[in-house]
Length: 333
Image: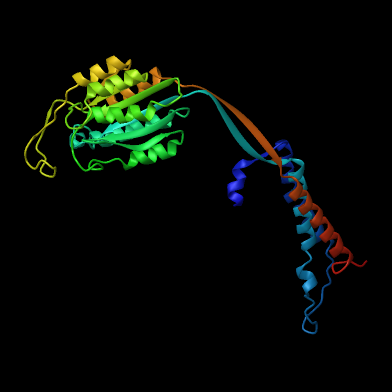
């Protein structure tokens, strides 16, 4: 608990703290003077003397220890330790957006490492981290669509939900782009935000689903929602992989970006092709630059004084030392 508090402690007068180095020097002077003042008597033998060691001798250093603690506590108190609390107030205009993930079987193709879907999840997580003023939701689709996370400003929840996305989350396979986009539009249609966008990530081969892509596109236009489409993948044939799902047969990767280009153009968004993990990251950077949130963050620092405990410790040590010096540890001439 103490270690959790220390990072928040600051001093109003930190230049007082170097006075603490005086304490070891004073201890050294005290002990040196004590040795010089010790009297000695030479005798031939100690055989007939009983040991003179008593509990008082054990506690003789105690006044010096108490005095040192008192001095250190008072120096720290004079430096005015304070606990610092930082409060941030955000104001301005954010953006409401939905990240729409294709989780169909084709998104497990390994022209990206480790595959298309995992690469999309990683880059999307980085994107969310860099959009502190926005409210973000998650929609996934294959042959059906599903709202994985409603629109929220809690980005930790959003990133945790992105981490859970996997192929097979929805039972039937397919690539119902129209259904995925329509569900995303439904999440945003009642939003009061001035800017509403959908970032749709798919390999662009549409089949299955009950809502055609052109109907979903018209719904997006109706509600003033811009759609940024990212076409993930390439038209290439991967080499045979004995350990993969396809056995020893080469895997043909299908990719058609004409549909995505049309959706982006009609809704006022832009289309990006991501043929690699690096180009996927660049696509997100471009969206980040195009859709800027107008957010102002004001930081307030609050301080709570913490010097009183040190004053009390110092005074208590002085009082105890005084009582001991006048009673059990009293010195007689």
